[in-house]
Image (cartoon, rainbow, N blue to C red; front, side):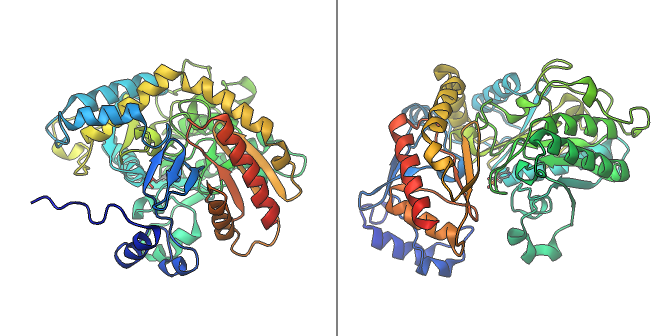
Length: 478
Ligand SMILES: *Cc1c(COP(=O)(O)O)cnc(C)c1O
């Protein structure tokens, strides 16, 4: 017998109590829910989430950076209904299906040129694991088994499973598991907030690239890959940096024979203004070509890859990771895209040379179908152009907020805005979260960094509400 969902009509208080007794919530000290209660959500529509008592909240963080086109999107819903009636799931080892094939073909056509092969995982962290394993396995298959180390940027975030945590530089997530993690080195983050007084974001990024070069020079023999969050380090507090760093990272990784892994789990799918953040790397310029050409590593990758045409804009990483927005925020799915040459290094008669990694739900048809519907919306609605107008509108109305006496480092990349709030900081994040809820906003500050990462369907009236109420909240807390 099919049991109906228990008490589908419930109150906030009821749902909250039942959740606290049976659910262990992620990223939480459960005891803190005594003082800062959970938010029970009954339904969603567009940018709005509604609790069980009918109160609404503007989802300004896109439900942890995943939602692109609103909750209850009719086009994604229709695609999923259709897929439900066709095929809900089949294993991908030894089997294939239309949604996964179409998605792989379309991503190959849209992504930086050269990323011809899609490997699927279930979530962001599993994509990181796959890329790290694939990179080291590539070097093993090509006769360089010493290349097993990784580097990441300071304050990097690439997920929280043990392998991903080894390239995640967030002490709070890491310290308890130090003994379980293979420590990896970090290199300075080009985070433009860290530039010296009077130093441009670009010059600071170049200075960090010089530090990267030094590290590569010393350690490339052991290094498999350098993993970065292109343009915006999300969990670091929406740390934004100059795109010249991407160009230099690509050049240096080529010169020293180290893979470049672009973790676009948060920044991909249009979030930074282009479909992929890697597209924004500036063209190769002579003054910036790698120093020390001629004494670079003998590991140098055979053919430097420079994105859309040699010398053009954008870079092609060796691995491109997507998750979060890929399904429009509907279902867990991740993709690791990689270059032909890497794929070929695994293609052989021996089983052990193959990439034997798997997850039960790899390439789930429903998730792929949600991703296809998401790509359809990008194509049909000219989303990137519409987002440019929305971003300009929000920047226009945000002046009283960006110039508030307690606001520092107001910054914007594509559909991400962030700023720091000065003032008494004890429990700032929780107090801001709670006050925002009272003001119909879902804001989830990282430390004293407040950020907006709204669904792309946000309209002008909603942006106005977001900005004016955030100003009230800042005024109240500063
Ligand atoms: C969220 C995120 C991850 C991890 O994704 P999960 O699905 O939460 O495991 C990895 N990298 C970046 C940049 C992220 O923002």
